[in-house]
Length: 294
Image (cartoon, rainbow, N blue to C red):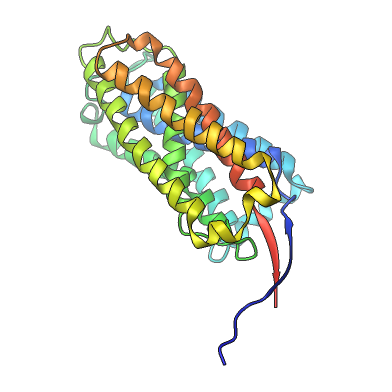
């Protein structure tokens, strides 16, 4: 006779609260903004991205019961995604600082704005930028691997989360870029770049919607019984994430790409992107339900 696990009890997780939500939002937004800033070749945007990641790390430290013992998480990179994430963040800061200093020295203190920042400068500088970008990408995606490794929480223990955090981090980073003033229309390549970013936003938004629907309506998503456990989660998810965080920015991006409205309205797309990703992080953490299985 086949033996199957039997759930005898469950409880919402309360270990990770708003401090962790803010950490996930700021680190994802900062790393995503840093990636797009690399494409723009903008020192100021890169610096803002690094500051956001640093603030996120501070919120995470504030959530620890013994922050002065946090260095111990670095000792288990083979088995712990927390250790891998901490090491990845250190690598990101080291490479990012080196890249910023190198860019500043290369452009003699000026802010580099170039139509092709990846094809200018020495090879070692371009390689350093590429490695920094890879480390930023890891910062974005590693929380998804961390959550998917937690077997006691059904909704978190899903293969969807790495992809969800990747897309949402890029969304949030793009939202930060849109919120910061930038001379899109004064640069000869600015309009073509913004069209590319808007087209990417539309494509990523459609993929993101499809992925979220699959995640919520998958077997594990149904087993977690999120609506029954926390009635505020569906409101934050459907209204905050689906409508505000994805659909509204897609509409604005389509209008900008079609030259129906000016690029000065891009902050109207950036703000919903950031708000939606805050709601997503909140929904994911509050939707975590511990189960006791025999």
